[in-house]
Each structure stands twice: as structure tokens, then as C-alpha cells.
Image (cartoon, rainbow, N blue to C red; front, side, top):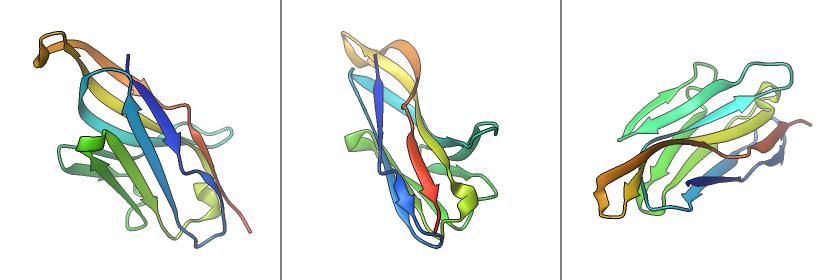
Amino acid sequence: QVQLVNSGGGLVQPGGSLRLSCAASGSIFSINGMGWYRQAPGKQRELVAAITSGRTNYADSVKGRFTISRDNAKNTVYLQMNSLKPEDTAVYFCNARGYVCSSYGCYSRGPDFDSWGQGTQVTVSS
């Protein structure tokens, strides 16, 4: 089993910055991609940013303001959020996809996984 732990949320003023972190642990695994999603009350969950093997993808609403990065050695994904706006207020969830390594090692793949963090609240308000 692969567990994801979100951290770095909190209250920030408009125009401020915040950095979210998400670390994967619990099993020996290989991650193919990681990403960030957010969900505001009464709204559909939406993709914020994703990264796979150096490729990145961003929602139009955050392009130029948010940056996703990944530390493969630490199995951690980050989301640097700058120029935050009140409409960025939401619960942010991290996601990781890949496969669990078998008892023979990561060259022999085990079950696939699609794991989610429990979310962290980001509130942008004066």
C-alpha cells in the first residue's frame, strides 16, 4: 500500500505565496506520475497541475502562477503557489500513480496504484 501525506496548507493573504508538499511512503514502489487537484465547496474537483517524467500540465487558471516540481529520490511532489487569489481557496489533494514493486525488485512490477492524500486546506483571504 502507498500512502500520501499532504502538508503546507494554511491561511494566506491575497497576492501571497504558499508551498505544498506531498510525500509518498508505505511500500517499495515506482511512481509514474504525480499531481495536484483541488476542490472548493459546491464545486467539482479539478486538476491543478501534474508532472510525469519531466512533463508538466497546468490548469489554465493557474498558469504563470503555480509551479509543480518533483523530487524523485524523496518520492515527493511540490506545488509552489504564487500570486494567490481568493478563488484559489480550496482543499488541495495530491495524487500519485504507479506500481508497487514485487518481492524481486522494481524491475518486476506488482499491483498498480492510484493513491490520494487526505487533502490540505488552502484559504486565501484578507
